[in-house]
Length: 351
Image (cartoon, rainbow, N blue to C red; front, side, top):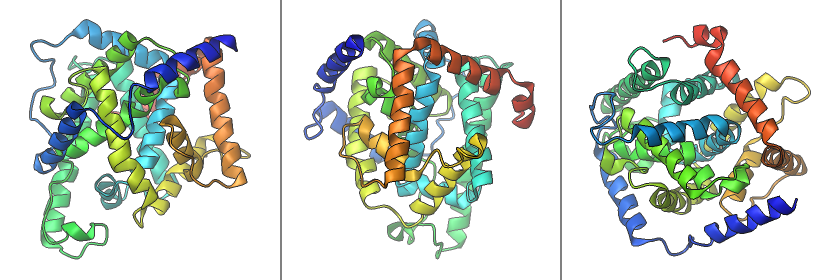
């Protein structure tokens, strides 16, 4: 317990370096530049191979960090996913594809996403013969296909219910560089903003390696360097993620689009499917949103008694992972066994 208190005090000292009200000039300029890329195609066209000055050792250290801490990192990603549904330009492609409109379809859709993430961190995304590389290629092709389909469809149909009012008069770039940057932040943002609240005790160097891993993944997925949140390391990425949270996600959650509740509920219900009765209500929309708010130090939204219970159960699980590394190692090995080594999963989501 004393160890936990010591680490928490250290984490608060780090957290104090970021002011929610006054962002650094670098961060502000970077976020504005990302916004300027909203009409750029979200695929750089670069080959899936490391750039000339790429630091492979640093990337591999970040990949190892991801493998060790994947249980709570995956909770952070799930939190980002639920909260991110409140951002219209991230929500609309999901509505359009129709791959997440029932709990069963949502479960398959997001299990597939998690399988791809596992292939990136347990595999080798730079080796053309590896599942990691093939997964990156699959995701890029999928993004390009959805982008083309959406833009062609919107060019022919002006009155589409899923399109926000202010963009109905013109065809906008779908899955743009800007949107890719926002999605990239969702994979690691909650963890780098406050690692302790996701059960992770680490050094700044380790966090910088983790961010570099996501720089490499982002590059491989087609994010240009000028739009890659991770380009300049952990400190800048953390500031940018805080600004995305403060300027985009939190306001969106406080003024949710009409399809948010439906899509978020379907997502959480789908995520409960593996648990079965009597734990098939383990996740709820508001309890996951509350974890997101807790992670960034935001005041919790109104919660029902049931959602409070879910929220504190999740916090207890995180606390147990923090206090007992052997528990984290066990969960990490289970995730690796099920989502990377399992022939069943590889057949189900074959490339």
